[in-house]
Length: 291
Image (cartoon, rainbow, N blue to C red):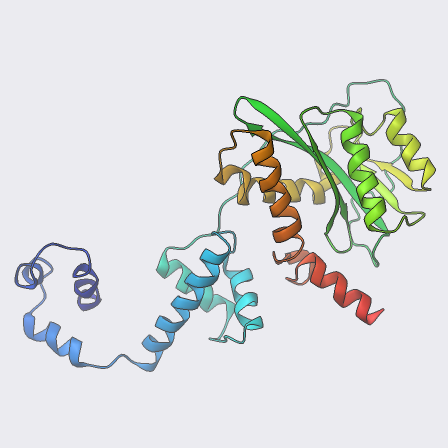
């Protein structure tokens, strides 16, 4: 390890080798003998593996931990043993996936509008596409202002099938996201549409849209974030992997960034642990091929 450390130091230290070796208590003869020895097969493999890990890690801007990197390398035909080995090499390289942190709930349930029963009861394991969708709202800081984002997610594939962004958190925000989802899914009937009991989802315009397209309205219990855990998880992922890594000065800048994340990265590229580490679109393609 000392010899490898000396070699690493030579790439950045201004000290000469003659001064560096005594400081680390390494003899010149031992160091030069180490240089002459060829690396072991294991060392060579680790060096190659480290290169692949670094590549995937930085391609995804630190969003991938050892599980997703392992699956990604397997699919690329790169195999160096177990997932645990990937974890150990990442520790050796000092690479960690971006950690999550908490953020506030935007639900406004302090209203007197009618609410719908909870049809899901925290059962998020669907058996087909368009069996149940979930929706929610979050906010993104833009300078000293806010941008609000509403999404609709298919529970089976975890794909974001509808979304909308606006500077106000009004009923139009959630209606536009639902309209996009309906259009993208060719207007299916009888889908469970689950949200919290916020005033936007209890509004006349949103409920009219639900009835017009024969959807089954479902709402979480009051103050229970676990009833809509899939949307909460998506918002955590979005904020940790994108929003918290940037500073948005304008709403247009934030909109472009979030559009890219949802449509170009999350739906198409990012591997999801809930669907066997496939991207939502690839998962749906597989489902339709086997249907």
